Length: 539
Image (cartoon, rainbow, N blue to C red):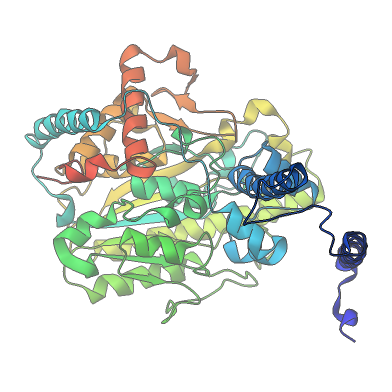
C-alpha cells in the first residue's frame, strides 16, 4: 500500500536505493562473518603500538575516518561551484539547484544537499592591498568627495519618500531585434521617459534572476565583482551575514522601525526574501502568505498573478498609514513567465506583425505585450495618484530582465547585449522639490542597478554619504557594469552603450574598479572595517 504512492518517475530511484541497501547489508554480514570477532583490522586504544598488526590496523581506521571527513568537506566546499567536482558529481546524480527557492530545492534535491549547498559558497577573492588601514583611507577619500558634492546640494534623501519598484520582466518589446508591433505597448512610459530621468539598465538576467538585480539595486553592490560561482546572493550570501547594508537603513536611522516597508505580490519564501528583508531592516514584509497578507490581490482576466494596479494600491495604502517619509520596496508579479493567453480581447494578437515566429513563441510574445500595455496604464494611473498627494515622493522604476520568450532573437549571439537591457526611470511628484527634474540624458542613457540610489540622490539634489559619493565616481568612470553570463566575468558599457573590455578601461576607471572590489569585499566577505567609519552616514 505504501509503495503505491511512489510516482512512476521516481520508481527507478527507489528501486536503486533498495538494491544498494540490500547489498550494503550483505557486505556488512559477510565482513562480520569473516572477522568473527578476531579483529581482521585490529584497533586498540590502550596499547596502540604493541605490534605491527595493531599499528597497521589503527592507522587504517584513522585514515578511513580522515578520508571520510575530507571527502565530506571537499564535497561541501565545491557543491555550489559550477564546474567543480562536487557540483558535477551531484549533477550526474540528478541534482538540479533551485537557487530561487530553498524549499523547492530541498523538496526536489533533498534537504541535506540543500543545506550543504548553502553552507560554504565562495563570495569573492580578497583584493590586493586589503587591510584596515586601506579601508580607513578609502573612507577618508570618499568622505572628502561627499563633502564636495554636498556643498552644492540643498536636500536630504530622507526628506522624500522613495519608492523602489522592480517591475517583473518589464521592457520595451519593440527594442528586441526582429520584433515588429503595429501598436506601441507602452506609450505612457515612453512619453514619461522623455520628461524625467531615464534610460536603459544593463541586466545580468534573461528570463530570470530577479533577486540578483533586486539585491544590487538595494545595496549598491554588483554581481560582476563577486566570484563567478556566486549565483544567488539572496540564498548564498545574505543569510550568512550579520548586518548586511541596504539603502532602506538610511530611512530607518531617521524614522525608526517604521522607516521602511517591503511588498512582494507573491510568496515570501522565494529567494529567502523573508529572511533577507528582516536582515536588511525592513519593518514589515507583505506577501500573499504573510500575516497579515497584502490587502489587494486582484488578477486580470485569467492571469494567475496579482496585477500591477493591485500592487500599486498596496503602496498607496502604506503611504496613507504614515505621516513621515518612508523607503518602500515593491516587487511586482504581473508579467512573470510563462505567458499562457491569459487576457481577453488581446489586441496584440493582430498587432504582432513579426515574421518567422513559431506559434508558441508568437503566443508568448502576444500575451507578454498585452501585460506590458496593462503595466503602462497602471503605472501612469499610480503616478497620477502620487501627484495628488501633498508629500514629496520619488519613484525608482525599473524592469529586472527581459522575458525568456524571445527564442528566435536569443538564438543569435549578436543580440546578447540587446536582450540584457531593460527600461528604467526616476520620477518625482509635484510636492517634491525635484518635480520635473531630468538629469542629462548623456549621463543616464545607460546604467546598471547598483547605481539607482546614487542617481536618485542626484535627481533629488540630495546630500550623499561617502558610499554614495564613491558610487558617483564609479558611475562617472564606468557607466554600467554587470555579469551577463555565469563564468564570463564582467561586462562594461560606456555612456553611449558601447561594450568595452576591461583591458580598455582608463587608468582612472581601473583604479576605481579596484576600490569597488575592496569596498564590496569588506562589506560581504571581509572584516567589515568600513562599519567603524562614517562611510555609510550622510553628514
